[in-house]
Length: 230
Image (tube, rainbow, N blue to C red; front, side, top):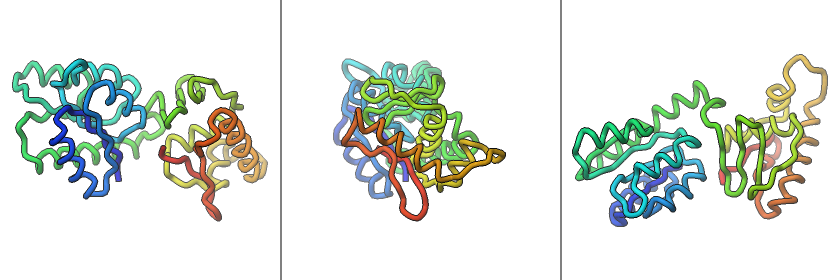
């Protein structure tokens, strides 16, 4: 199912919503303030439930900080009823807005609707969805074609980077050697898909020199490789 981030200082509401979403099979990340929410957003949730009225950093500011690097749906929650607040939330990059108090069934239905819309969008244009990806300490800049771990640049060849980008954009999906070879090298090149094995070995070595305890690429024996959702 989906990874959902809830950012709200009302802990009872967060607990209730988290229990309901986890019962439906979703993975839930919870933050009780804006700063923690910005940090957890780097884990690439598929949807964010974001309260507006929080101390220190409100939901508007959280949205501004994460929207340039994260394009998943953001569903705003707020006790504010003014039309101007709704317009502001949507203008900043929110995808939906629900006023407190609200019915739990309505909120869950809104979440489901936004997830379905996002899944359709990803299916149509998955490879152009984000400009940056984050997996724990590893960051991928899709515009610069660069990879960093803990801020340190990883020197990848073009083919190595292309493999990383392909797998990371489809985290959790298993790709065979042949599929990776066709996507990265193209159909017209003469060669052997076993070269993919050697390239992934080199990628893993470079990653492990900086982050030895984290496995970003897993081997699915008898099938191929996948990028781990971390």
